[in-house]
Image (cartoon, rainbow, N blue to C red; front, side, top):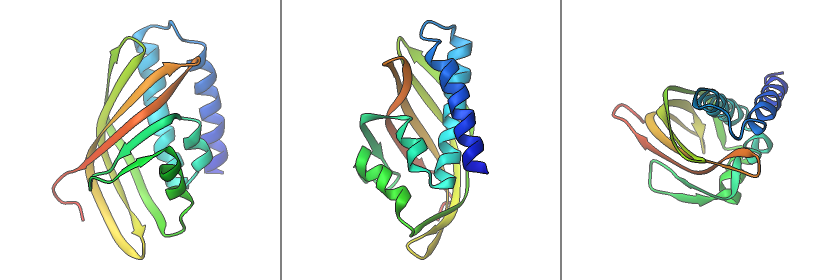
Length: 150
């Protein structure tokens, strides 16, 4: 049910966002924050298809441990049954625009099991979104840990 709700919400926001190429900054900010929240829900649901609709073809991800992955590797991680998140949340989101590019920063909290080992991370992230082909696509993501993560 959560996946269905996430997909429906994504379609509604995306339809609005895609029509808003020249929209005002407040509308663009609302759309990008909604996309970030949908991304978080898709990660929790391990929904690679939903994430795939939000990232560019040359997407680059840099993890807190320095590991860099491309689009294919990033999406494959969601299909790995060893990855079992139980909590994923984002807060304190800020959006800064540079023409058709937006930088979204915020705090994140994630908890679960990966490769049989429990983890809990508190950190910061930076996502770079580009408005192209009439939609917002994340082209780069970076995360870093805060103290207290394990």
